[in-house]
Length: 61
Image 1 (tube, helix red, strand yellow):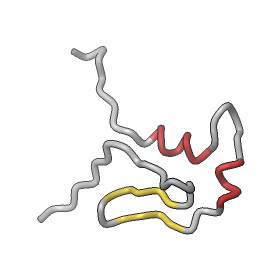
Image 2 (image 1 turned 90 degrees about the vertical axis):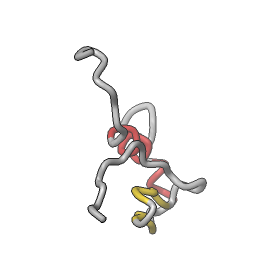
Image 3 (image 1 turned 180 degrees about the vertical axis):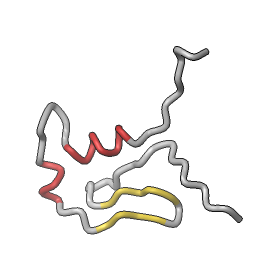
């Protein structure tokens, strides 16, 4: 079966110490202090998760 690299969204775990990329891939070991780093109005982890979501191009419809 071919590997599907498409990701609809990357959710963070409840304590923000893991990012669940796929059913078979979890990025773990994120320090809890990382969620306190806020270069803007939201944490950097929330920004990374939000930037890697699938989006629909409504302008081309």
